[in-house]
Image (tube, helix red, strand yellow):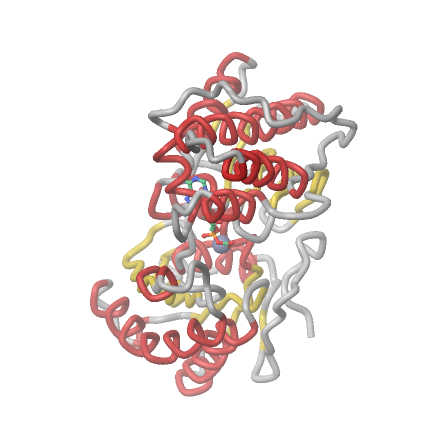
Length: 344
Ligand code: KG4
Ligand code: ZN
């Protein structure tokens, strides 16, 4: 592969319209993210139809800005990459259609990327020398998993959630406390001034590397409802701190165990919840205590962005994976287990 391979990447799987120019999978020349948070806040969560309409309005400008900021024209681009799953069907469709159009007119290859592969690659941008193998904790709005990343395109899922994703659980707790959307950062902020003195329930954990969050979510919701029914004040800060500790302790404990059991000396975090301050601090602390190197993505690569898609696309293309054509269609339920890149 030639040096200085430039990928124009597009991400539109949920409520962020993003375009980035990434060189050789490691250097980000531009990463424009147009967020719809203000729009969806009014509804208390992402409204799929509203999201796709706003992607349509934003995408052209976002791509132009990304090229401009990278000081590039379409002629300088070697390939076009796009997230084709998992995500909201209407949102994905906007990015996929736009990317197909660009690939068609420029006659440049089209690379289809699994969104979660992208989140992992956010770490390659944050740490230019980071290389597999490592154990990766994936924590986003749609996924929670522990994965052995044996090589850039060889991932083995060793733990998964049996029900809700961890980000979803943060969002639901925020909603019951009336904190608004997106909930994760708001719960985390309140937790800073609370005491983690509430024990909601402590079931015996027989899940191994797997997770279950729906019971935890319900435990917090029931706790809040009982106080409301009794007309008692709701200690929001303490609830947030106790909930956050509960979740983070489990994530960290299982990830460190997976790393030790696998004999790997590197642990990596990926996905929106990797922005959580307590998770970053605790994982780093426990990794250090166990002689494991800990990598958490730079804040700009934690939540959804196109640069991470450009990085994942580079390694896919280099290894002959992910090359798509005009028949590419979004896959809203693209599975985490199905870590293979796009095949027709
Ligand atoms: O990866 P992401 O941007 O989108 C998906 O691919 O799903 O993750 C979004 C999730 C949301 O649930 C959001 O509440 C959560 O990440 N999140 C956080 C924090 N920042 C974002 N959760 C906890 N603490 C945070 N600081
Ligand atoms: Zn994401």
